[in-house]
Each structure stands twice: as C-alpha cells, then as structure tokens.
View 1 (cartoon, helix red, strand yellow):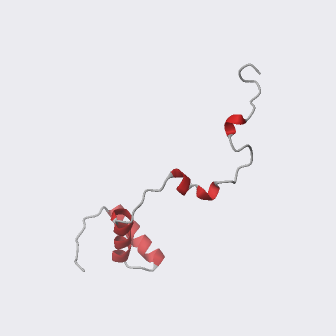
View 2: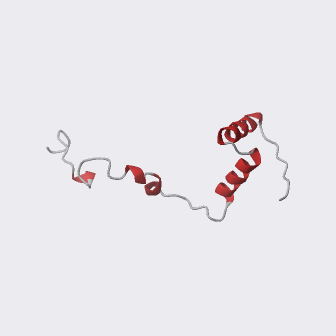
View 3: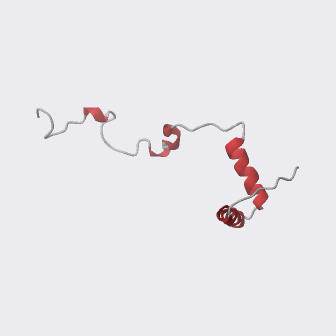
Length: 76
C-alpha cells in the first residue's frame, strides 16, 4: 500500500473520527471504502425505481392514477 496525505476541514476530520469509532474500524479503512464506493469501476447509478423499490406496491388505489375520477374539476 501507498501512503497519501490529505488536507481536510475540521468538520470532515470529526465526521471521519465519528464514523471510524462507531464502526470499530480505522479511519484509513473508512476512507478506502468511500473511495471504492465513489470511484470504483463497479459503481452504477441507481434509478429512482431502484432507490424506491421497497415502496412499490405499498399504496392502494388504481394502478394508473390518471384513471382516478376527480369531482369538482372540469365539466363534472
């Protein structure tokens, strides 16, 4: 491994320290994971559907909301 020196704001240093302490891992391990997540080759941008997949099917009503009858609008 190589050593890299970074200049960070105090706020970022505190965030890094807190994350490392909470996870029981070193600050270097946290930084390596973040770099892999954001710069790694496997990174794939998630669609809105991918992000909200757990919510699909949780709302009752017609499948196509454009079919819902609205009263008091238009010529009704």
